Length: 290
Image 1 (cartoon, helix red, strand yellow):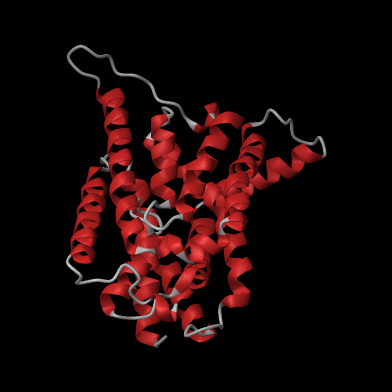
Image 2 (cartoon, rainbow, N blue to C red):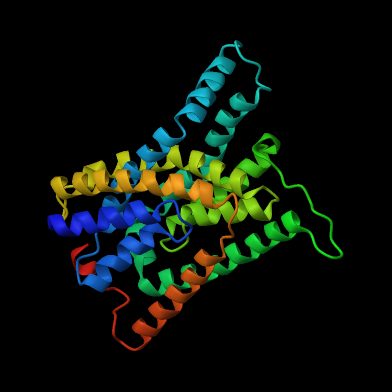
């Protein structure tokens, strides 16, 4: 992998990780369209450490408060009914599905799941799901001629059942094209949470999963055509760009709809199907070197 490739892929990772459009799919597609080798699941997992570092810094006050309350609850210094202490446990509970499936489906994640036809399918299907969830949220928030405005749930109403459902939604993102934030935010909206609450828990829930995945894949970082230097460089680029994107996204969702992302996902999926169907792009483009 050249330094130019690592720069562009790091840029793509930072731009797409927090948006509901799938960073893993865009890394895969960028390599395929450019005629490069597929960077692979290991490269993707490690560069995600960069964007997760941005989450750690952006939500540092929330994370410090949750960790303090959670650790205090272990020794009886903080009541287990404390909201922040409960959030600590809920992040652990929500991380279980992706941990189990990530290990169980490792071979599929690094192989069949990277087929461009599957990516096109997940882009479209999950785009439609996000659109439905967004419209339901908008209907509750705006009301209508024959509908009253309906209050949506905050994170203070999050329990073990909903936390586990969030976790199952996150685990779906093991398939490129689903999108970690897209799946968890969609699940949250369908369960009646506000956009801000769904997005905030989505980002917090991703921290242990992404850091564990990146650490697990470190052993494979220097294999194949991807070396340590370009991987670290891409991770740094992803961190810088990712921090700017998360700051923008958290402001965006307070007043805007997710529909632009829905249209983008569906259009990209259709274009991808057309290109593969016409033979202009192989569904396994770049995989030989990945």
